[in-house]
Image (tube, rainbow, N blue to C red; front, side, top):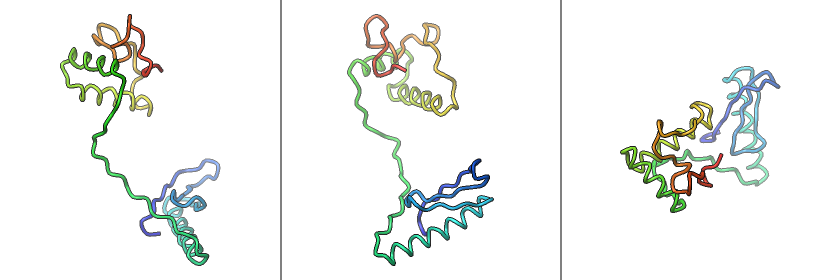
Length: 145
């Protein structure tokens, strides 16, 4: 079972915890407690690996935990780039700070942990990334909800 990932979640349907090994499609186990589900999935994983080896079937490789640098390269339409740059200037922040802020706000909203983005007015922001760089306040096509 060494180095394999385990995911454990409560199941209302089963009235207990279900443990799965993402690297192995057919390996799962039940437990009335998290500890029991973990112990059972270890047994199931060891049996699965033993069977694979006995039958000459390839053993799945353990997933490696990804590391992230916090940097990415992003391509966008020139009009969006221009609009976001103008918005960053008007708010006296860097373009990077603005984009990180907007992404964090949208990410929180999508996950249900942040407020819904409200309408942007002149009292809240001078420029909106939804309209900046478009004609007559039209919403930018990439930012439509």
